[in-house]
Length: 425
Image 1 (cartoon, rainbow, N blue to C red):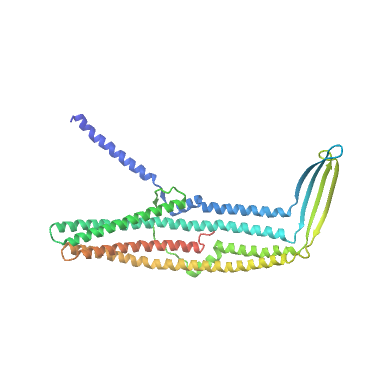
Image 2: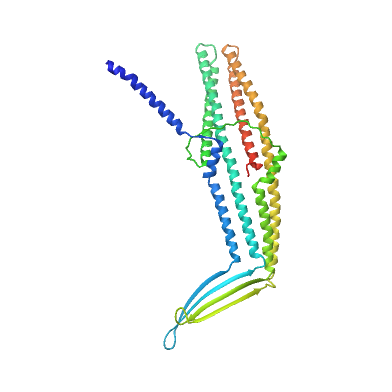
């Protein structure tokens, strides 16, 4: 090889290494880092559930306009043409008229419908808040599921690594004849089982990532780096204060109050059938054989009507509306009890997980110490392979319990904050 070619080799190698590092840095830079707050903001922007709630709110707002139109006059234009055969020649006739109707008094029916429409609009507006709070919880849970999946993969990967190293040592001892073949076979079986658990954990992690992407409106195959972690942050409010806050701030309770007012207004609307109605009408028309007509006819008047007997229709509507009010009252009580139960369940589950966090840390420390001791004894020839494998399984379980306790605490804390209405403004 020539000296010139020899000089080129280090240069080519350096360029190749530089390109590799550059591509690696670009690849890492392309993976976005997402905090929990970033994820929630994305979900609120992209998730269809919020868009549906906003559409319901807009629909209810137009419902107010629709019912308010009942207090305004209406104007209609009508036109007609007739051709009749006569004895000598056909006769043409034209009729054109402009009519105005204005209901001055409806017994409170129109006013009640407007009030109901406004209450429905408020219910829909609270529905947006309700959807936002639920989506925040769902996104938080999805975010924590990804973190939990990653932690479980890590625990199982450490188990596979430890058992792989242990198997190497077992093989070495078996080759020199210091241990029985059963130790080798048992170690191989345990490693195979651990590899299967790792495969399952990886699949659960991939599913969690896809679910998170779906929740936040990202492509299903997107990869992200989670900036936050399953850390312990103490919840300071008492159970009683959490329940009290929930009764004051939860949008479901405000919606229930509006629904009760809607039901009460429905009774007044139904009862309006017992009262008279008053309306103004006016008509201006042209008729004749030539379009638009030569004869002008106009009229204006006030009319009143009072349904003295309607065969019990109005009474039945009132009874129906009162029964609906009773149902809504029972539903209001059910909603309040359900919210209190939701708060209690989340609070107690959070406290239970909180207690497990400390005990699981102690268990991990003891299990790691026991594994080292079991390995040392086995490699010194005074312990058994079963002791090492049992110690490894105990450490895996302790690590799994620790990450599960942290996950359970954070998820139930998020559920409690949602149940208490902590994020509602």
